[in-house]
Amino acid sequence: MATPPTGLFFESDHITPSISPLPMVFTGHNTSSSSLSPPSTTTHFEATTLYDQPDTFDHKLIKEVDFFNDKKHDLPISDNYDLHKDSTVDLDININTGLHLLTGNTSSDQSVIDDGVSPNSEDKQTKHELATAKAEFERMCGENQQLKEVLNKMIIDYNILEMHIATMMQQKGERNCKEDVNGKGCMPAPRSVMDLGLAAENDEHSRSFDKDQRLNCLKNDNRDVEEIEQSNEATIRRARVSVRARSEASVITDGCQWRKYGQKMAKGNPCPRAYYRCTMAVGCPVRKQVQRCAEDKTILTTTYEGNHNHPLPPAAMAMASTTSSAAQMLLSGSMPSSDGVTNSNYLSTTLFPYSSNMTSISASAPFPTVTLDLTQTPNPLHFQRDQLQLPFLNSSSLPQFFGQPLNNQSKFSGLQMSQNIHPQGPPHAALADTVTALTADPNFTAALATAISSIMGGGNGGGSTGNVNNENVNAAYCDNNGNVSN
DNA sequence: CGTTTTTGACCTGCGC
DNA sequence: GCGCAGGTCAAAAACG
Ligand SMILES: [Zn+2]
Image 1 (spheres, rainbow, N blue to C red):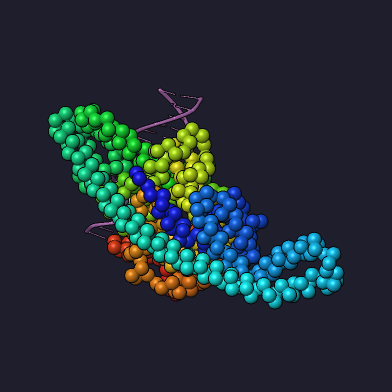
Image 2: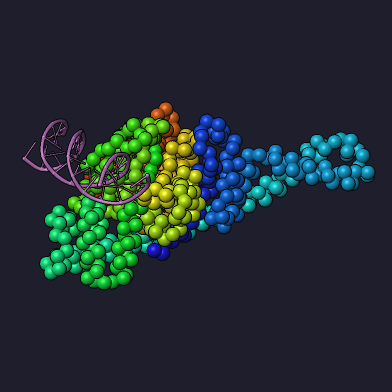
């Protein structure tokens, strides 16, 4: 698919200046205790680190430097002063012979003079530059906003088209297979037929049915293109997205409705693994597995598989999109196919641009799996504060931020969510208050992990389906009262 | 009473 | 072929 990576850039343009001290800062830090960085004083270092890393930010360097220069001028005037002092000292050394008196007065006098003269003009110049930079920044924000709107519209159109295509293909496949059932004896599997009739294109229920019947159908049709598509679909169905998050709850809420259909004791883990299937539509092939980590039972691993065959509420689309995107990317060969767990910068930065240090890919597993690890945040408060505050301080809504990183791979609804949210969402000030309340909560880490996980699949989308699960998610980040309940 | 969860049985793929 | 492990089914129980 023609993924608009620009979508990422738009958002980055918009957010980066503020959210820069984010996940990138913690790249490679798996343990939390020693790597906790002091919140305020390290901000600039973190920002610098970020800019040093991904080339995707290079093109914004100027803007961002300007942005932070604003702060630098505000805060460490002494730094500038020192620099000037140093340079003047050097000059003095060179010219020194004729200025004994002055040198006798030492550089401190000079510095006083410098302070009296240059700062005024410098201040003016600085303010001018600052104003210019701000104007430029605002202009770009506006431009960014426009581009986002355009992108948003494109994404919506794309989603609609995709839905149409899926529906058409499934109807077509159903028709072909039914004909075969009547004529040449495709396996009539009643349940599968029923499922297909109820709109299951990628019905995971009937995997064997899919294989046998569809292959037969394909033989009869003898269309290479479809064959390729079928195999791709199979790969996509098997591709998985795994989310690790700390949560007390037995499952994370992700905007979908699930029914538990099995539970097994997995080898090497005392905690049972639970199997759920999506029940938002009859025959939806999407499944998920939920299991606690053996080492740390506060960590909940949720693995998603398959694509929904029905319209999703915005709340649930991010995760679905992520799964699908991961599958597409795995399928496209953008990742190694033979070795084990790898760190794919490409996929990470593309799929989870703000969480690059938290994603990993396993190609050696029975199924290619993309793992989003939300448990490795060294300083959840710091991380959360930045992640939560900055986006909407930059005029973006929270869901937009959480949704967007998952959506740049063409389909997706983070932007939709943001749009849907604006009319009814809480004002930014309220969000800021919420964040304050959140960050003050002692149980915040768990809530955070759960919330992020949930928001990944959810976010406040307007809940057209009245999904009960969403309520928890919303409470975790949208409650004006700052209540955090999970 | 309809829906969801529980749980033992069953199926499938894989390694030996 | 056998055993193991992962995954699914489906009847019974629990729930609202
Ligand atoms: Zn579904």
